[in-house]
Image (cartoon, rainbow, N blue to C red; front, side, top):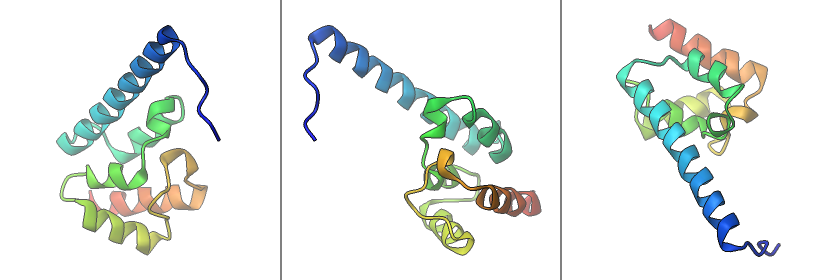
Length: 106
């Protein structure tokens, strides 16, 4: 599928929108790492925030305190969550399994 031709103003607007979305996701991951945001709060915010809904679950878990990419992938494999899954795409069982896992560790 070919990309649509954009005029310079449309291209600039798209670049600004993408940069804003990256900033929102980076801020959320930073707050997760610092402990200022819980996984449950992130999932709640993602229900109304398009950029957060597009955040990969693996990236969110890797940002949790005491977690990294390897531990996050292992947890996702244990819970049956695909490594490419985004927060928006989590099923009800996957969401509750994640929340239970982090509730036990708190």
